[in-house]
Amino acid sequence: MFDTFGSQHLLTLAIIAALQIGVLVYTGKFASEKGKNIIRWIVVLGLLGHEAIRHIYFAFDGRWDYHTILPLHLCGLNVFLVAYVLLTKSRRAYPVAYFWTIGAIHSILTPSITDSFPSYYYIEYFFGHSLTILGILFLIITSDLRPTFRSLNIAIIVSFAVIGLIGAVNLILDANYMYLRYPPEGDNLAQLFPDGNYLVILILVGIIHFYLFYLPYGIRDFVQRKNYLTLN
Image (cartoon, rainbow, N blue to C red; front, side, top):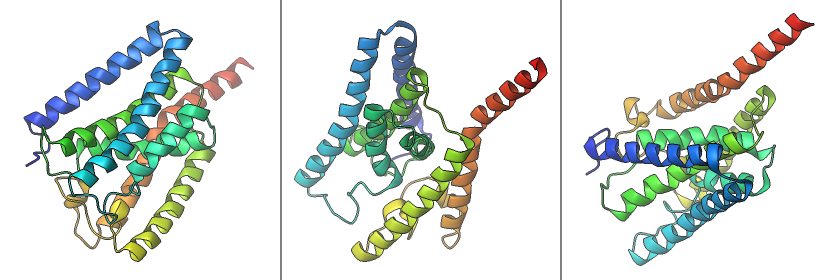
């Protein structure tokens, strides 16, 4: 049984952090353009390959079910979005991928799983979510892509539109993608709130996080604007 912030979970988080810091330091300090391109492709193939292998394994294990396994959770959708941005460096898609990656961060901090290591489901859960985070961090240090205040608000609108679409899919499939109908399993953020209120509160928390993750860019823009006005 998975124990949130137990020794196994903390060790997993430490390994993820160490590996990501190592990759990012190498990318930012030592990698040539060819090396960065190789890393970019490794992350893209890792994201897409993980998603494909995941479905194959679930099918062979008898646990594949369209009610739960389709990539229609926010993190599942973001796998493809991050891969797309890594391949295209799309300025329109990047802000949505950037803000949606907040979900992956929460997912590894408060996982919605019950399996523990060395279960395949434990490994693939943390691998997939951490690779999404790595993809965004890689883009932050290797490109000039960034969110703006306008793109922040567009990302919120897009997120609500996706919530509406997935809500309709849930009704058709009798599913619970994006946990719109009831909270996920495990010791996660949704468990802190009453069943009737968890969704509204999580959406509000999500919007607050969007603005918090924009804050470093907003502060930098404010300082640069202030310095420009001072000099002129």
